[in-house]
Length: 351
Image 1 (cartoon, rainbow, N blue to C red):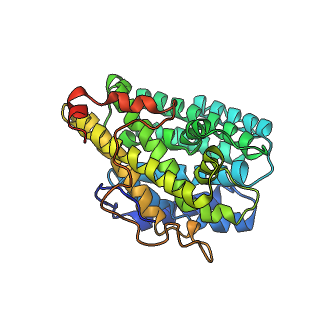
Image 2: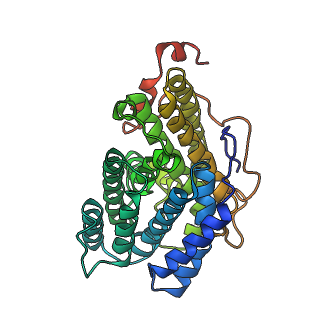
């Protein structure tokens, strides 16, 4: 199953060095006690992910970003996804994480490895980020950690959320909010608050979170199928919502994903027509994140499983045309407002 993403592929030349440094650091932090889990994380290619999604900036802030990716993956796998930690225990852990981020100098002797690692990264962030950027990143971490608790509650439920709730949940829980908040920090510029609060830019940012979350579902489902207790995936939610089989749900997911990609491209071009330099770089960085995430996933050992179904994206990753190029909003109240941001002139050229 190929992906539609007409954004040029670019990779930072320090990908391998980034990964080497990050894996060594991750092992030093003792984020995971389980040897098998440490081995799985070491194969995630955090350097490749960072170099593909943020192919700009200096090596030092890029290394910080790669380390951040490592902590998020470890937290997601070891505490949220693949453990029997209850949602209330996770809520306590994420509350401690947020306090460490809000007040990193107030060290606690009982910090968990993830809290301690994120405290260190928050302190290091001050070398590259302004107070305004740290505030925005901290707010983004609140979005992420609240999403983790929401996700954990559903993973321990015998039921599945509605499609509308799942879309909201997953765009928050996948960790994209703090990741996109790092775009300007890694690149060494600052976007004014007014620009980031523009509804069109907010929509583009949320679209980026959502496309990455849906793309992750499409190429990670093979791994999840090996765990019989895990069906919190866009395909499974669509099966429930539409009362259909996985094959038809996959087709629907691809059409949904491509329609949102088409909207991203049109809205991106609309914003770029009158954007200042910093905003222009940020919006272009969003597109690079979407494409770089797919480039990384296409080769990451994390998502390779034996005897993978032939209808999943193991080869033939790219296609020239979307499965759905409609500019009609998807029937999902949580995201329908994105389409409202298209200008009258852009709507006039649709079709």
